[in-house]
Each structure stands twice: as C-alpha cells, then as structure tokens.
Length: 67
Image (cartoon, rainbow, N blue to C red; front, side):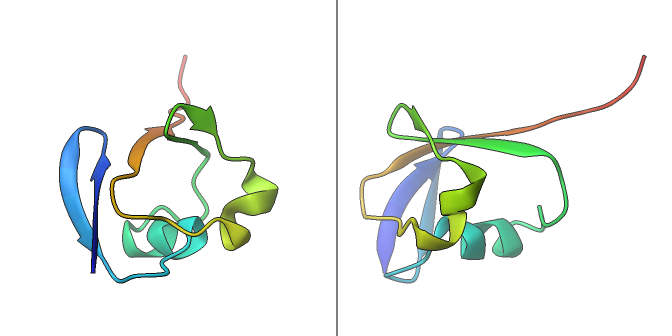
C-alpha cells in the first residue's frame, strides 16, 4: 500500500496504481478533469502511464459547466 494526499485528504492505494486507475476508483471516468501531481500537471495522454508513489500530493479539479 502507498499513502498519498488527494486535495489535501490522506488516501491509501495499492502500490503501482496509475492515474487512470485512480480516476476509475474515484468514479471520475468521462468527466472533464485536470490532475496536478507534486505541482506539475499530468497530461491526459499520460494518465495510463503515470504510476503514483507514496508521498505524492495530487490536486484534482473537475470542470463544472453552467452559465
């Protein structure tokens, strides 16, 4: 297990979890999101290839439409 922070809240995940797997676990599939990992934006094209590590700090923003 690894421990990291998501939007300031502690979270435990299985070792070798990718950003893509995290999105599925958080039920964010299909939503317009931006993810920052340790101060750097993770491009959507790298979600499946970006493995999370213990101590990572993630900020996840979900775009909300409206007017």
